[in-house]
Image 1 (cartoon, helix red, strand yellow):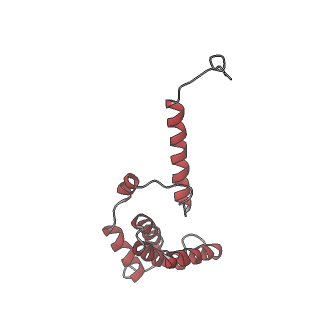
Image 2 (cartoon, rainbow, N blue to C red):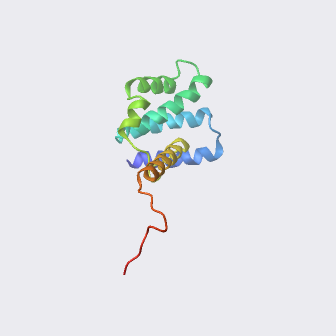
Image 3 (cartoon, rainbow, N blue to C red):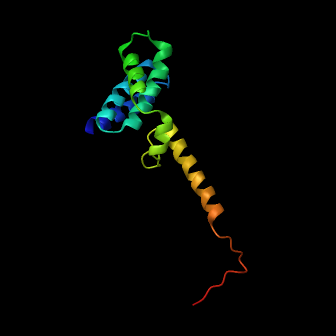
Length: 130
């Protein structure tokens, strides 16, 4: 778990110096994915390997070890459809732009559901008693 935290911190620092789509950042995401899987978070690991593979496919040779690892793990881990059914991303656990977007989407859905199911009361029908 400590290794995941340290690696996540180093990637956050790398993101300050490198743009999304940089091969070095993608390689570090691949390493973090392995550590994350060992720590027990297969959903987050799959997301990291997917991000890494997307970048590496366009920048490295097909035999690149990091690309091969990422693609193999994407074949072995559950698909994103299964991910949506088994977990809910919250603001507290969001660690990427896509997770923050998912948390916002979940919040919007919850607000819409609550507004549809809440009994509507007008100000005139509401009474206050002592």
